[in-house]
Amino acid sequence: MSKWCVLDKEKTSAIDIQGRPKHQWRRRQQVKEYINNIIEQYDPAGFIIASGSEADIKCIYGAAISELETWCNKTGRKIYAFSSCKQNEYDYPDYVIYVNCQTYDTINYHTVLSYFCPSQSDETLKPIGDDYSPDLLFTCYNNRPDYYRSYIVNSLFGKNLQDLGIITYRQFTVECPKEFDWQPEYWEEIGNVPYLMPLKDPHPAEHEFKLNSGWNFRPNSLPYSYHRGLIDIVTESVIEKDELYMSEKTCKPLFAHKPFLVVGAPGYHHWLSEEKNLELYDELFDYSFDDEPDYKKRIDGIIDNIERLSTIYKSPEDYKQLWNSVKAKTQRNFFRYMATLRSGLPFESIMHHIGINSPDPLAYTEQKLDDILTPDYLDHSGTELHWVLEFFREVVVPYRNNSLYIGKDLWDRYQNFFSVDESLEEIWGSDNVTWASLTAKRNWIRGSGK
Image 1 (cartoon, one colour):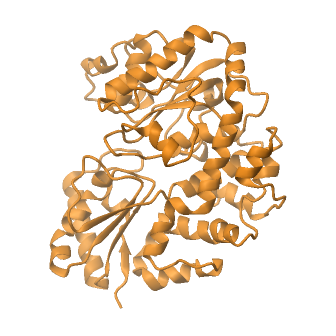
Image 2 (cartoon, rainbow, N blue to C red):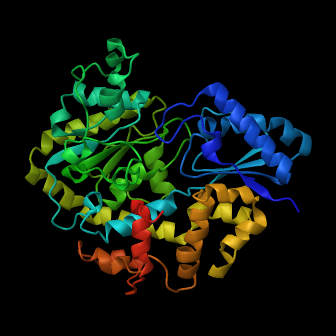
Image 3 (cartoon, helix red, strand yellow):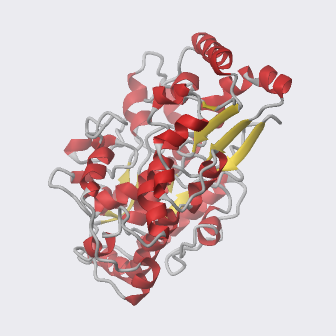
């Protein structure tokens, strides 16, 4: 019986782990050889793209999808793309079946548990609590350059809001000018920012920031100065029509208990309310910009909100007062989000596809993957299928069975930092159970357990 092959993004992606483009001709040859070897060895039942943590199917898997066109048309077999959203700029061929699957939420879940169980060395994962006192109005963190990020950075400076928050744009303002082909006119897209002004987190520990170069610089880690700003202006990974994607960027203000605005796809905040069951901060923000098809108008609406609030709230004392007024809502949103992840609903589609839908946690084992997948999946064992399999075994199924699961003690740990009330207990539950393996999971999140 033929088995399914999970495409290895390290072999198909157009960029490396640092976001740098690979040599195109060499990559095409490598992808062709990789695909041909898989087909020759295994004659797979089809191919699986497990990409719930990345929305850019075109960049990561486009070459492999093109290479498989002839084979798919000849055999009638399909590529199932399990992804966090359907990419707007990519024209999905008929032989590619898109399935919504937000597998990165499994990482977000464990990140939150680590956040409320910090060690002394976890400088980027130390939670706030009832005594939270921000000294700035906002944060707006950006790393990878993109047109909409340049626009919001330029707009914040254009409105003279830069001194009221932390604005970063490290790759564009620090790394790009060092490249041999840099031209001064490239700076014009952020022309309101003084030329060569480095936009980076002011904390000394962030001066050597390089994405994925250490556990404290992983995408899901909080920047060192993140808690200084009250409102988080999130610039999501994708923002075009229907790209309703909630990455770790939007997760951060949820677990850090910060009100936030998102530069995302049209209707993004409405989607958070309707699909993610989160309460919007209507008492703070005018969301009338949310459905604007023009990204510039959506960003202008976000800037208008920040500018308006800056005329009312002018000091750290004001920011503290403002946060106190929405603290209860940030708490409810936090537990709603975690409860949704604990249910397994955002990513169960990929388990169903490979034939696992069992009330027995022991059904979610590596042996099941061996039965369903071609053996090469072991070559990239960090694949998201493993994340989900482990999450169902350790969290979802035990929770559904009213048994021990990782995170069941979150309620107790949370109360070390925040006061709670009955409304939160109704959302989460208050089981007083701990699990020693949480320590191992924390180490895994920090990178030392790999």
